[in-house]
Amino acid sequence: MHRRGSDRQSAQAGRVFGRAVIAALARFVIAVCVVLGISVPASAEDIFFFRIGTGSTGGTYFPVGGIIASAISKPPGSRECEAGGSCGVPGLIAVAQSTEGSVANILGIADGTLESGFSQADITYWAYKGEGIFKDRGPITGLRTIANLFPESVHIVVRRNAGIHSVADLRGKRVSIDREGSGTRVDALLILKAYGLTLKDIEAVSVASGDAADMLREGTLDAFIMVVGTPGKAVADLAEDSLIDLVPVTGPPAERLMQTYPFFSRDRIRAGTYFNVAETETVSVGAQWLVSARMPESLIYGITRALWHPNTRRLLDSGHPKGKQITLASALDGLVVPLHPGARRYYLEAGLDIPDLPDPPGGSN
Image 1 (cartoon, helix red, strand yellow):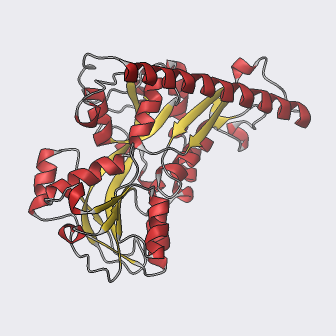
Image 2 (cartoon, helix red, strand yellow):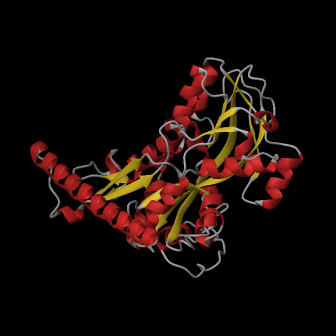
Image 3 (cartoon, rainbow, N blue to C red):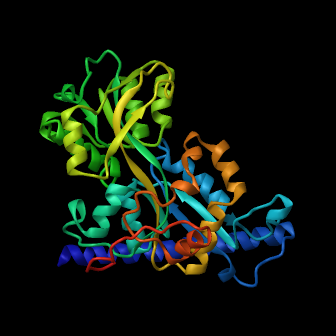
């Protein structure tokens, strides 16, 4: 009871803090508008701040989130879309917020400290069903989907010449499995288990991918596991200095992993993705953009429309290598929770076939 009470107090504190930050931002935007001579909205309520929970700054979620936030935003005074200005939602100011990753984003949506966030499909599935790492908490039924974005490849990054050529070779090595609350950590534990390893078999380190890359560069880490859309910046930076190799996730253990957890699929990191790193067989999960079911239908409809506007296409294609894989054609692939009504309305108007998904299970949030 004490723990649940503490959780409620923490969530309430987070909501109060979030509202205070949003109010401060609204006052700041209005003040800037006045100074610059831009027409000011009738009230601060005409400005809506929309947080997108992403991940660490060394991964793919954060830069992609920044591109999408820019595309869907249309602050007061923006030029009209037809005049080469913003094609986002009028009055919307979206912000990509660095977080600890999928689990933290889902919990932020559930407790109201985030309006939306990116998450791996596997983590989303467990949260919505109240299974796996969410078993003690129960189903988080207030999750809805805006879009499937891109595949995320499992990277097992190892220090070159460290004698690590397979997952089994990680035994006894100093390995980062990412932070508590990240989707990478969950998948890392599943992969280790598939190959017969536990945390007792490695010297586990719990740091973000950027910090793990720094430690590997310094020689204080032998390997780190990262689930990220290719190319991951932290991996690319190390590869440029010829410091790393990638370990494959393949063979019978990988086949058993995919049979047990169908949200994993076969994948390969092609040669040339990272400098001087050979093609590597691995597995991947889908990255999906989630939102709170509490968000207004009209708002999410506008956000979804802005996401798939031709101007956004240009931003995605030029802004990040993974952006080219974010397409309307794959927007509904592999969904594990229902679409938000606003997103559903857009996709119906666009002529897409809406997948059948189960109703929310019993539970809260």
